[in-house]
Image (cartoon, rainbow, N blue to C red; front, top):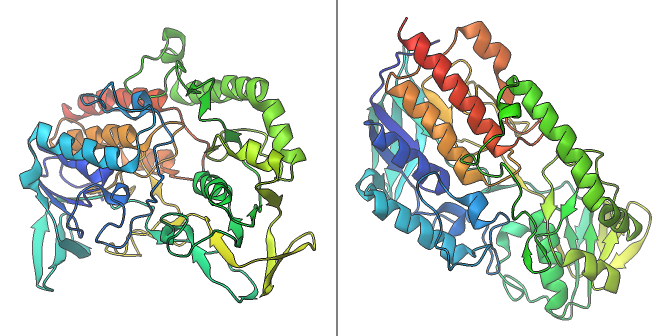
Length: 450
């Protein structure tokens, strides 16, 4: 079903970074936007102890991408801020973003979207509930789902029971909250960014022992080299960065393949010995390509493993009272298991028949447009090699162009053929993604005038 291009009233669900970027971009395009946020604060997961109870932020959380990588097209972080700002500064930056572009009046806090019902022929009826429990329903021409994917914890199916607590990392705030780790034996499950960072933090906080359990390997990159950001000077790490003329001349898929091949060779040359060392220290072998899954970024893990402050262990086989048994048969006494095992992709306010994310993925056109419901957009969820926020801005530009009538979608067979999963794909380059969307916008502008 292709809806009319000139939809005007838009509901943006969520006032985290993606929702704020979408609201600003759509408002600037002349659309009437309501940004509905269940919390009493904007900023999403960057608000530690967010009143909505969904934040995954911990006290030491900072960005894994530099200020330059994280910047928006018309809004950068202050030059005197650290290269990797902490959660409080990120929240401050987004508060400033809202006020600088003057769209705070478009945000309704304490307003939870409980259901969004697609209407025959286009449009939505959106049901909301406020902090007092009052329910209302309003009509919209389009819905932008920007509620994120870091709020529904994914717990591993661990056999057996542990005498101590088994928690998801979403509950972790600092080495004393929710449980003190000093003097305890802690198993951290998962080697994504959070698992690597928390294992090191817990070891430094005086834990008796820390075991880092991994089912599969991943590339673990340094955040800094010689005191400077490791990615400093790397090309095309933001959608606003220039793409060399040779790449611009190639078809989109060829560009991405060339980027992957060149990037893979450079990663292996620069990081090959480092990854071999991780494997020698007990972590599973990383995938052949650093783009097949999102790499982790962590400075202190390698020295922590080399010193024995953190000990690598394979997948957990079972919990056994006061012990954790690993797949290789080793038993370790453990007081606490912390699962840094990621989050489910969930949109509970959308019909499952339309948005089925039971496998934690979703097919979309151009990274944002629902393939069959062209008045529904997924913004802020992606697999870039850089930061998420500027990708959300690129996605929002496409949405704004479609809803304001400046862009027309291709025919349905092309949409079906071109739609791809959000996560089950190689990580993509931010600048190449922006270039592909710019090219699609030009094609769509020509279609809109036919």
